[in-house]
Image (tube, rainbow, N blue to C red; front, side, top):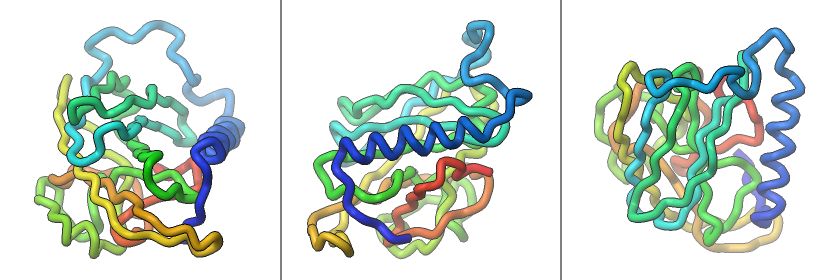
Length: 202
């Protein structure tokens, strides 16, 4: 995966553009962007993510597939956690974008790795496992529960932009216990999974 530096503003604009392109490809016959009728409590999942070593980072849930689009608010990690209300129909195929504006920005959205290739669901993931991984799944397989608590680790490693030469640290977010995944894996760069393609969950 080729990674180049973007300013925070450029990264946000690129993300908005990617989503706009994604929405343009969704036909009128598919699910609308917003529910016509407000969802009831039972139709939503309370997803709490406890995040280690990324206080102040932004986490954003995304569902971008040909069958529809949904994006929750980008929330700031405060006290080591964030909590999202995710419509149940968007849980399977959900991805979590992670952004730390204090680190070197990359020319890609960075996703929390749901499962590294070769790991079984439920298995523990060490920092060494993550750093050495060559591929990972960014899309969640969902859950039948009404609420879940997931644990995410965010490691940092040295990174140099191949074009500007800017050096610094970048992030490697992953769930410390492998979750059920959905879709196909993406290549990992030192264990980091990112993409410029809005459709990461086919």
